[in-house]
Image 1: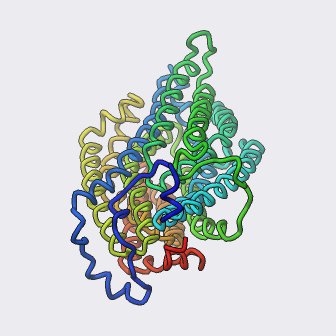
Image 2 (image 1 turned 135 degrees about the vertical axis):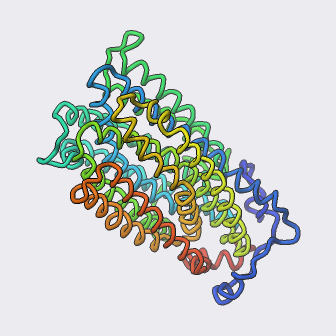
Image 3 (image 1 turned 45 degrees about the vertical axis):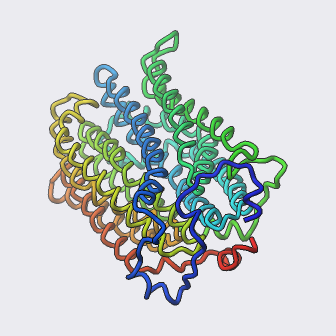
Length: 509
């Protein structure tokens, strides 16, 4: 397109770029979905390269971010004496309300990624940039609101997470959790910049730049962890509070680098102060239509996690610390599915923007194959070295024994978990997010949380029962998401009429 050719921006190219626009319609999707084959001029190696090109930087970014979270817990857990276990529990209590707010914003950015990917597929550079500006403005406002709400309610959130009046967690741990959470809220505005820019870059298929600035931020975080937790180089030993400040400093570094990476017109999406930063109703409708169900989904996910965490917190400080270690390890293992889900979202959105239903299906096929292969390998490693992995965090015999048993379930769940993330990612790229929200609401609230409460309080299965509930949730959700994908309904889920018209007549864009 003339508009895109005139720009000097850096563009991430895929096999899709050299293919002509498709001609599928809603009427013939159901008939054609059974006969999708690779185009004659496309090789399997090219498809694998496209998937891996987006997935591997995302995977490295996510793994390094989670390694930093692990380093936080490991370094806090290594504080001498009882303070180490108290610190682990405090970080775990503060993590749920923090992520409840942050992940809801990340979910809203799903809409940005999907819409930008669709316009990238249409080669509509101006529209992609317009969506990016809208998303940035919206997320900054939301971030400021969450900052105020979080600071005013941090103590209440921690009391809620610990089980309220029935809590078995000691007062020192609770206060450390409140202090940790209060400090975390100061980093919300920088995080909003980073989240929005990362979502936009993923929409155009550029996952390498987020890898660079997030990796740098993680290194800064770990360095300041060492300095501020233990009191090095003249700093006082701040313990758990030091870990929280270190995280904030890392997030500020990421935000500065992220803004610099898109400043001006050096990339396909960018921040140009000469352009208007005002709300556009049509664009916001697209973003919110996709992002709001994802945001609601994450809201239910966090609500379920709160119920789940409250149930586990009743097992006492040691078992709750063990649970937090296992949750941290599971979060690391989830990176596989999440990274390939980025590929699925981007390639699905771009394929549908170019009206290439066949390429959307083919890209999903290869993304799922690669994701399952990697996830199976990770699952095997987790089950084989489970005791050693738990021992990295804490060497208390009770913690190692209980944690090792839970890691058997986590390892077994890896392929199922990856399949669920990848299919969900593809559906997000197509704009099909409502079904996922309904499924998540049911499985997390009813299956995971309800079953956890039942196994812990009535069957006395302890931590093992809680994780049986977690695995049951993952299996059922994967089955339901696969069913939705297999129906093919996602293929003709248009966004606004304007976007659909541009897809039908790309030469006019």
